[in-house]
Amino acid sequence: MTASPFLTPPRLVATDLDGTLLRSDGTVSERTRRALRMVEATGAEVVFVTARPPRYVDAIAEGAGHEGTAICCNGAIVYDVPGRQFLDARLMPTAVAHKAAEALVAALPGSTLALETGYRLISERDFGKKDFQEVIVESAAELWEADEDIVKLLVHSDRHHADLMMTASHDAALTDVEVTHSGGSGMLEISSPGVTKAGTLALWCAARGIAASEVVSFGDMPNDLSTLTWAGAGYAMGNAHPDVLAATPLRAAANDDDGVARVLEQLYGS
Image (cartoon, rainbow, N blue to C red; front, side, top):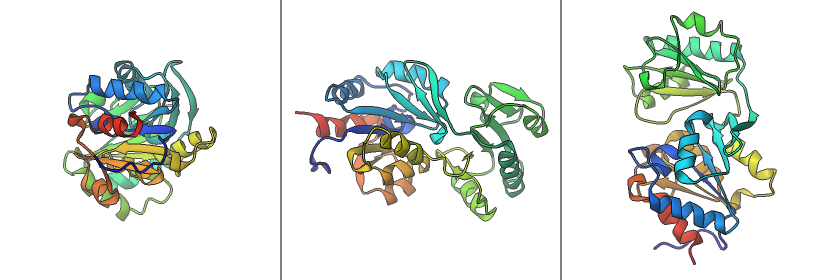
């Protein structure tokens, strides 16, 4: 057992979901459920911090026994889980999303687009992530005709790994958006400037008088780097992306080995 990075238990636990709190089959283990209950019994707060939209968080929260807050869509939405309502939403102007989409499609020929509104995903018919598709339009042009709020632009490519797509986004010199990815398949996630997991988490904590030094965070992918480096202690999962492992000295066991629960037991156990 390694020494705790905290003198007293942290006041807030910020955890990613996929590849972190969830096992690879998408479930929350009983050990993890017990660990989350233990944290909350001490008076500390648990916040889910995820790329998922709120509607995909509800079932996970129920399985985890979580009745608190979720920061969704990489920081674009603050969601009250038990109340099933948005507490805050940081929207992406349509013109900004359109400009970024054009630049990325030019840099990544053959890529396809989708827009997350917070309530539903609107995608081109050929959008590569078929399991994400909810509302389908026949062409990219139709995406921009929908008079709906946008919280996140998704760009998918069957030809490129997400790491290579990130390189292409840097080469495209996109300066007025936040670009990140959740690893693996070729998909980029684009938000408004300043919208990151850590940015929204910092605002949430500041409103409650919680300092970064009082937060422990967990994550596995590049979109988690902002929270892992902002928090007083950020744990990279044993299964984390190489960039995350390189940037984060603290380690948790892999998600399938209940890595989050193991650390929480150390930090909050008697």
